[in-house]
Amino acid sequence: MKKLVLAALVPAAILSAAAPASAQGWGRHHNDAAHSTPARNADIRQDIDGLRWQIDKAQRNRAISGREAEGLRREAREIQRQYAYFARGGLDRSEYRTLERRVANVRAHLRMERWDRDGRRG
Image (cartoon, rainbow, N blue to C red; front, side, top):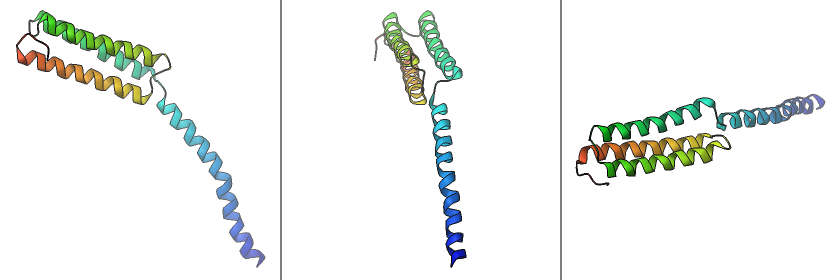
């Protein structure tokens, strides 16, 4: 009877000792992955700068009007402001995705403005 009880208690003791260690390790790695990385900051800054360059180039090449360019620049400035706000505490994955999505939306607007050839926003 003692052997049966001992056999049941040993695995339970091992599992209970391992559980806190694994929980701590997961939390530590999970939080590290969510914090800002220099690469994320550099990527999003490069995307915003590239967006501004694309808008300027499209206006220089007369693919979009000045009015269209100004509206797109306003959107790019808003993304830059949001980036500055997010970057104060470090960009997490969610904030990075939000900024990337906004940059992609402005690029889509730029593409539409290039093709509509009406000189107006929208």
